[in-house]
Amino acid sequence: MNNIKSRILKLAKSDTDRIEKAIEKNLENEKGIVADAAQYIIFSGGKRLRPLLMILSARLCGYKGENDDLFSIIFEYLHTATLLHDDIIDGALIRRKKRVANKVWNTRTAILTGDFLLARSLSVAALMKKSEAISVMAGIMEDMAKGEIEQLNRQRDITLSEEDCIFIIKCKTAVLIEGACKIGAIISDAKQEKTNCIAKYGYNIGMAFQMADDLLDYTSATSVLGKETGTDLKEGKLTLPLIYALNAAEPEDKKKIESIITNKDFNEKNFNILVRLLHKYKGIDYTRNKAEEHIKIAKKALETFEDSDTKEILSLIADYSMLRKS
Image 1 (cartoon, rainbow, N blue to C red):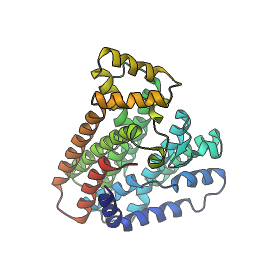
Image 2: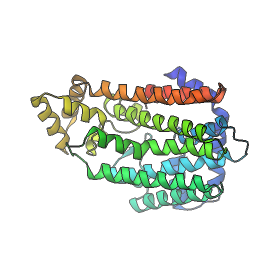
Image 3: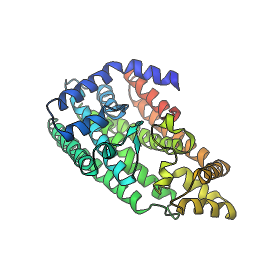
């Protein structure tokens, strides 16, 4: 995993440096608390995956312009806005190994900072002068809101199905990554076949990333993960490992799982019992296998494109999505 990560960082360094500079330049004239809160979370160690994927997708599709770095920051702003809002909704305490913004400032400031970043993403998008790109962005925002609402309304709902869970993953995570890749193709004026293929790559990478993230909640330490382990369960979120194990469990163990899920005040002992049951009923293995299926589909979608350093980075990112530890 470390070898793959180091290769990605080395191959993509010039692009990630350009992304950092583009964000800094775009925010340099902003002053006040909202600007401070935005910079606090944006510069707190994010991977810049989504803007990087837009730049790489554009290059793979033959982009000849000079503004890919500027356009790419749209996706960092969208992602950061959702993190700010999610942390408030979820009652989170830690994000990227730091206190969440609404605890450093207050809830109102964090909400308005998220709103500011959403608005700024649209301002940057308008510079593309591509109506199709704006339509894609609007769809992303709608889907992300629908996913959050669905997840919020289904907290501790033991009837949540795998199909419901996949819908939430798609809306909350996959559509944004898919959109970053698709807009990379759109600004390149790529043919429909290539646009569809790079969007397919992005969608499946997004699905794999979220499934891997759901696994980390049950398999990583807080010091590695950058947020508290067991956070999903504390927030009442039923993710794929849990849903699969719940459906596969024998009656007695199923009652144990349901009891832990519905208990808002579960303790570390309860959590450890749950993790053992997730392993016993293959919830961890099933989720890992599903994520690996999405990675295979994503890499297959890249076969449309000629071999290049850019294609290699995208393939490495696909592998990294499953192997990462945080």
